[in-house]
Amino acid sequence: MTIQTNLNDRKELARRLIPFNHNEKLRYTGTPVFAYEGRGFHILRSGDIECDDEKTGAAITAFLQEAGILPQPEPEEGTENEVTQESTQQDETPESEALPQTETEPDRMEIKVPIDGMDGAKLRNLVFMLHAQQYLLNRAAGHENIHVPDRLVEDLKEEPGTDQTSFFAIYQNYRKEGRGFWIVAGTVTFCIAASGNAVKNRALIELAAFMVSAAKKAKRVQADTRKPENEKYYLRMWLLRIGMGTKASHESRMALLKGLHGWSAFRTEEEVKAHARKQKERRHQNP
Image (cartoon, rainbow, N blue to C red; front, side, top):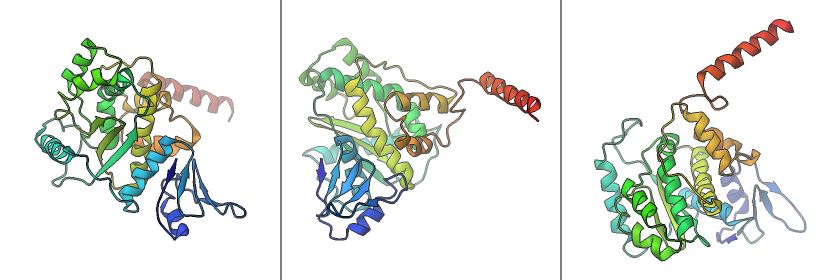
């Protein structure tokens, strides 16, 4: 996948992409390619960005749009009014006790991820995943971004069609009731509050791409909403399951887990205490 930037100053572009590249400087390859190399992408001699896969391309596109380097996409016909209605619904929604509120609406990111090759069953997987993880997703983001109507999930369970036509016949009835995402043919768009932190924003962009990829690969997804006490542990386990367990995603995982309750490496408080006892015994055995 290639992103056309129409920029002449490649050094400045490479500098601006450092936060996306896990805060690492891009490597200049020199002759014969004369490219700047990042994790999963290259800035070509022409100034265009060549990405290793569509997930990386979608994430970089959203990152550059947020940074003002690429233009924001034109809203689809009929989308502008619907987004406004969703924003109004968010202001009126009382479900915000667990998260800090601000007097002004925060800046929002629109993250577009391709859904090529996803039939009705895979799109249903994505909706079920968002419904199941919406509490943890909102806690990790620090804002009530995602809301999936319970009735949408119930109707999708009752009519388990496998083609997109069957899915959209049900989904369109609840599109305005949902918040933080909308699905059209070929694309899912996540509309979430920007955190004010470049690393956290990149983590949210990366997470969006991984969620779509995981929904595409999954045979079945449980839709029950999870509200665990040990938020860090369960979110971390889920991030590993959807593919964010690599070294390349380490910084993004840390950014998403920061501020959550609990322990990332231990499931219960008893396990934490047992680990502390073992460490204490080792120190006594090896003074």
